[in-house]
Length: 541
Ligand SMILES: [Zn+2]
Image (cartoon, rainbow, N blue to C red; front, top):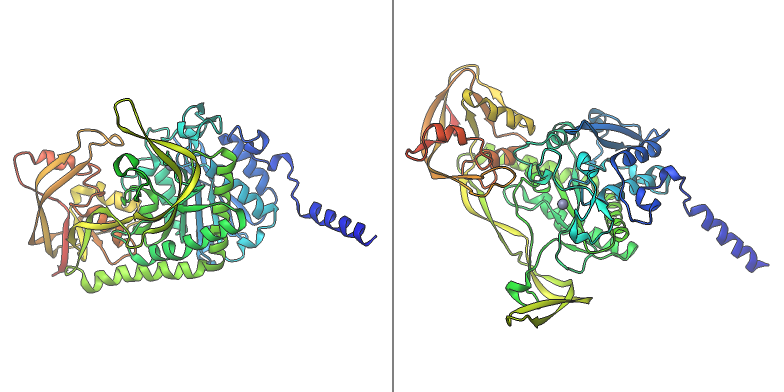
């Protein structure tokens, strides 16, 4: 009898805790045995069903795509917080998580909906006690629906069809962090990032090929010209903690993002290499804003359901971490911001910072690096070919090329002056959230001018740009500017971003993205030395 009642009891608890979702709360992959991914309309239908009657949820539009679709952002907060002003007044950290920036990489979109379902209808409601969560499941709306088989070869037909990588204007949304040419980046920066000021930004992707042995790889906002403390926290505390929890709770292996090259190093490989530091990538741009960010890359070669599971586990454990540590993360970011401003106030004109960087190795290698094993064979020409084995092995002490060191430095000024003819540059800075003032009287500035002796443009276009670099040198100068000219005081929160955008020798600044080509061509840079028109000042007289 005792045994029967115990059995009955366990059956009852099981049926009470197991979730039986109604059809409208199932995502498309669940309805199709993970053969299909959600269309834009299916995402919207799910979101509307999930938030129906829920005071903790508020649907807003980030902005519109080229095809006129609203880019949805779901604000989840305990006390019905709906606006950035209310969020700020609450003192709670805002965590922003987006899926589908590349709309062939679709598990972020699906996973975010699953986490939303857990929070609003399941057992994860407590995740709203200490934080405000902003979910943007389908950032690249238009291209999601241009589904075709074979759009993502490395995903091996799972799901059968996916959308396209570029947005409907033909740009890669994850190369647009500086130039801001797409509707989506403008909507994201101006309507989410600037007003809501997220403590953490999470960008959900899928990898493109390397056969490492992790279900998902991650990267922080890499440290180069920004502050180190937010990077240190992300790299040393948050990512290891989340990685352990995901292994404990989901039996899913996570590890550092990177590629390796057996053709270069032989087998076993000795090192992995990450991607570049450039702030054109949104995650890296976030570091220049003194905020934390995470790149998430589900392993392309696993099946769709596995990639949803690992991305879901990662997002859930990130939110568990921010639930417990979000306030501390906010404080670290604030301190980083204050440190950046202090440096300008105390050392502006006297200290140099990097403007061009190269990748190098971290001091600490990866003790145990998981990867699919390979054997070496010979092809008909006698050259080594690397044949992948089905088993995962651990390589010892693999060098991790995930650090960046400066190759060119420039003096950090107190600020910049932009002549009134360059109003477009001032407007562009404002789009990023930079404070730009207009001079109302004549003022004398002491600082440096950059004399450009050459402007080189890449032959092959990248993102429809022939990327430019200028060469030349700085010299001391004093200049008078007056009414209508623009003044950028660097003692402001976005100091590191402004510096990287405006420094003429930067490797991902406005010069690189052709903002000054017309000016340099008009002044016949091919035959003359031409002064870079933005003046950097160390002192105002
Ligand atoms: Zn991607």
